[in-house]
Image 1 (cartoon, rainbow, N blue to C red):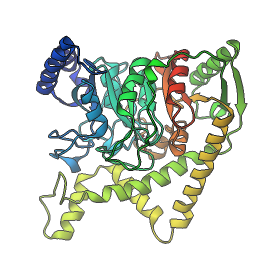
Image 2 (image 1 turned 180 degrees about the horizontal axis):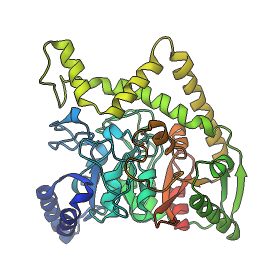
Image 3 (image 1 turned 120 degrees about the horizontal axis):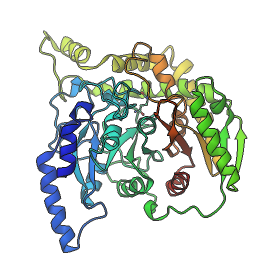
Image 4 (image 1 turned 90 degrees about the vertical axis):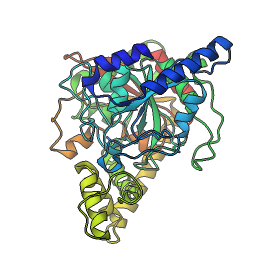
Length: 447
Ligand code: GLN
């Protein structure tokens, strides 16, 4: 803990942490030390973990990187965080992110942007940018982020880390501040597959506080990392041929596919005609869900309340106008529009239908193949400000990550070399629901 506290101090300018739990982390370390000596320590004894600023931790502040939650303290602890503590992990602090998880660059935050430790003029990715940089810069051992449409995988790719989005419903969402409830997952950042698997096996599983969480038993992922058979891999033609894909990423992805063939695995090209519908489907459905989820922030119950109101109505309006950032407001408006009576069928209902088509296509493919391999992102880490004035360009960054999110299946990003500027490239592997053990084994094999 002392070691990480020192690193956090020297690397403070990266802005990964918004709060460091120095006192409680040291106290917890003391306790864990006793337990280790007594031989009663849990699975994560001594692992130092940072948590994204959307996960509640009792008696600690949580802001979702938004002014609207300024000063808000949670009264309870998210199940995922509690499970870490129960296994003797040490929670070292709260990590910066895009406001309510909305963004791909960690520039939309009331705490100020997060810098990529490899090139401080570039973004770390988002929305879990702080969670990525905290592990990248050695400020903690692993971290929790959340992934609604790529927010763990994309920053993992931009920072050269391993990042998993588990199956939807694998990890309890109790105590996670919602962005889009039918997409939200809690994921893990680490430098290697084994640590990642170990943390996920601790946080996954049943929870009486979340009626949507799966009751399926959780395998010991970290003990099943051997891949001892040839596997069937599909890659999607449209993802490789997309004009948006940077040449170096294309090359590195094709190299891996060639290598797999040479090693005796079956690799096949498959058509994915739905690729062009994946982003619109994702952005219609998530903004709709977000506009509903964020209606609870009204100045009455949580955090910020405007000092400028003259009656109840203006209190609501001004609180929300002053409290939410630009991107969040854009999404609330988009979501409200697609849910409005005259446009509901044209947008929301249609997007739900297309979601089913994408999900069925993905699951069918994963019944025939063990894995789908594709790039995590179309580009490597871009410069600050590069997409700030163009929301659609920013949304295009999520081209490859949203398929797994729309389908609910698990996906992992692992490092796959570097581009000509020395920036890390991410490789994404997708598999069918609840096959995280197989996903980790293959990821470990590829690394
Ligand atoms: N960049 C995507 C978005 O802004 C994904 C975010 C996420 O996964 N939380 O919606």
